[in-house]
Amino acid sequence: MRAVEIVFVLGWVAFWLYWLVASFSMKRGRVPWSRELGIRAVIAAVVVVLIHSGAFRDHSLNTQPWRDGLGLVAFAFGLGFAVWARVNIGRNWGTPMTQKDEPELVTSGPYHLVRHPIYSGILIAGGGTAVALTWQWLIAVVLAGIYFLYSAIVEERYMTGQFPDAYPAYKRSTKMLVPFVF
Image (tube, one colour):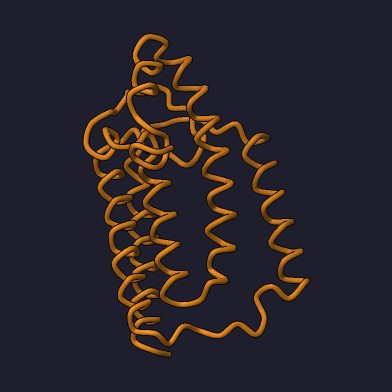
């Protein structure tokens, strides 16, 4: 295993361990399981079909140093952005599509740049992983992107209902996932 691969493995493991530990400090809430379960089942089915069709077999790893560097920069930026967003949202954070009992509208820090910076950061980090290691990581990034986009749309309906005056104005002034674009 090359050093760059070890960096990615350790980076993702550290990120998800932090995420797990940080999850113990969130406010109570509820998840509409039927909705979330449906999208997860569809994504799982797509993964099974991709594995069965051989999409993950016989892939060659990148050996170009410029791709390693570019991928590592995107990876570090993406995870850093997601962690900054997680710290900024504090106890209001929850798993995708969670409806908090006492929600607060957070619009500062990375939430001033995009409405869903955690999703953006994870997707950027996944893209960096694909650039540095193998383009087949893009399959995971696309599947995560579909899930995050769906989750963002559901969450925004909930937030509009919770904050009928403030959220529509925030939505008009701040892009969903990519600053100044989308």
